[in-house]
Length: 74
Image (cartoon, rainbow, N blue to C red; front, side, top):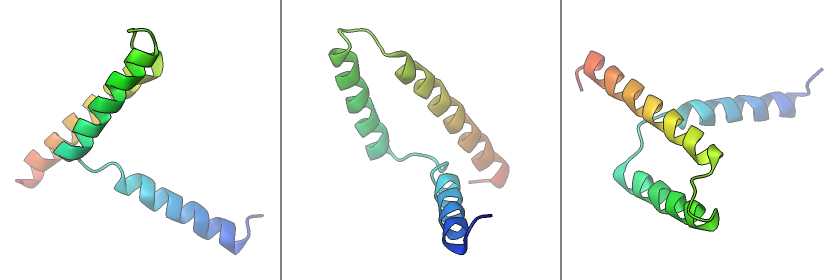
């Protein structure tokens, strides 16, 4: 069975994970683009598969955040 400390740690990780789903700001998006370009250069000019997957996840997250904003009237 999980101890109290492990349970608290798991709960904190869950809360941080949910908070990380917020819409990304312009500076964070720019930083990710720079990281993406560097990874592509390191990979010999080809986009790594992990980056392709992350791009699609980011697009889906942004669309979900935009839809939520529309529903909430923001």
